[in-house]
Image (cartoon, rainbow, N blue to C red):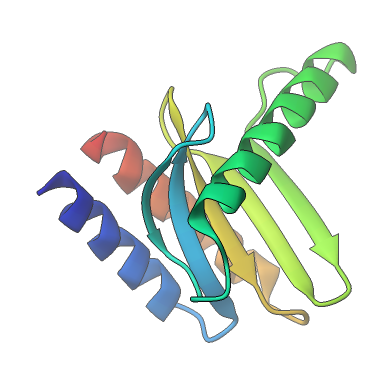
Length: 120
């Protein structure tokens, strides 16, 4: 039941922008909780990479005096990865196309992360 509700939040998020390729809810230790990702992406691998980025982002944010980590963004030649805290023990991960309107995606992703946090 909970996974269905999380998938509904992800579906709404993915539908909010044609630039969003996929999204997932991942535990902070890298376990996939729910996802709507393209078939060519391995869920376990995505979860593990999210955990690694979170650890580095959290440590960097703390060590550099930026406070508690809120989000990590990676820009690649072919798109973006956005990871946003979704409660104490999970994150929302969003994959977007290059040229995406990031302001709108940040706004929609923040709202989705709040919904995920309430469900968890």
